[in-house]
Length: 230
Image (tube, rainbow, N blue to C red; front, side):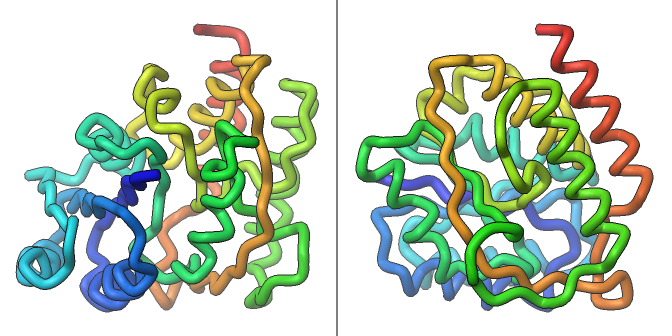
């Protein structure tokens, strides 16, 4: 099936070309939508130069920074794939894992597939402790609120049936996108959700990691909010 790979990017000039070339090497039937979210570096220029070299690559530009959620929503609205997935631009997630992530969707057994850093034997860089603890807590809270067993709600690798994700109204601009989309998917009791073990090469703040404890508090609020509102 045709895949839309959405790459939200904000000041990722150091890694964006490598990410895109590694996605292209997979030789998927894919459109690759890079949404530059108002970067102040050369991210957009690098992607623009690659459009003529990588089949299916398209650059969409936000004139000002709006947040990861806003960038992903822009990509979803522009997508045409039968499958829509998210690939971060920072190489914390290895594009070599994409075929594994897509397999349950291609086989027709899943509607949504989440990568997981906490199940399976894939390569893992040691996590920052408080991020690890925060992610485990948020997944536990998700499972309590929605009666499920997701092990890694905050994971950046998520893949969806295209028609399904385009039908869901999403409103979060920031990192609250992750709990919002999870909550709204889980509110559909007939949706089949699978998890697939993935590799993880997490960055430190010195290396450019952007998510903070404030985003964790926002995620808690979002899970509760979207559990009890439409």
